[in-house]
Image (cartoon, rainbow, N blue to C red; front, side, top):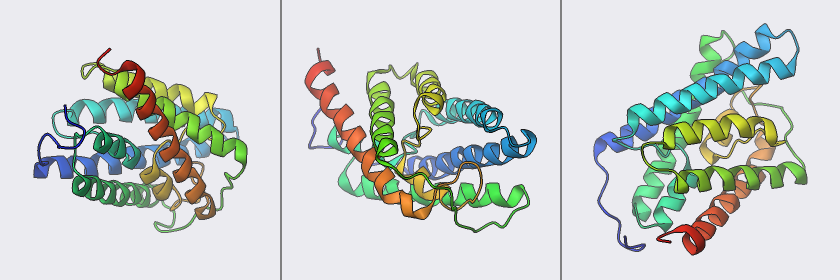
Length: 222
């Protein structure tokens, strides 16, 4: 496969899948965070556990049902696919815009269906160098899992990885610039302060690029 000539131009269904899939994913992430926080009576461990299960299930069914269309749901993943020559630069931009828009819409919808102000901004602090490193690690792992997984198993491996990474990373593995931006629109359990968006997104891109580089040099076509 050439890394300079994309295989094909996306069909309309691929753009729709990226938008809808990302919207569903982050409605699930934020909605389950709200539900978990409400039902756990202040126990963050229980809230995170519920948040984890819902995210794992959502990732599995979304990747499975949209597999034949497009299942990046993540600008960092789309960037890696551009580097691999699987999509064009124009498609990368379009996918990223749709993913960010979908994430924001999904979060706003989650706010609304749980009876809170639909458009708000989070004040949840996620700053610190250790969380920056955590996001590099989380994103590195996610992209490497995607690149190493077979098409038949990628839904299961991605869902399992994110479920685990919610617990073994201090940042709870956002690993997605679109989701990071979207989650700033909810001042709830899964939110992130707008002031922390930039360093999370930079870390995610660094992690994705490191995974791409490692895979290209040591695993691809070996």
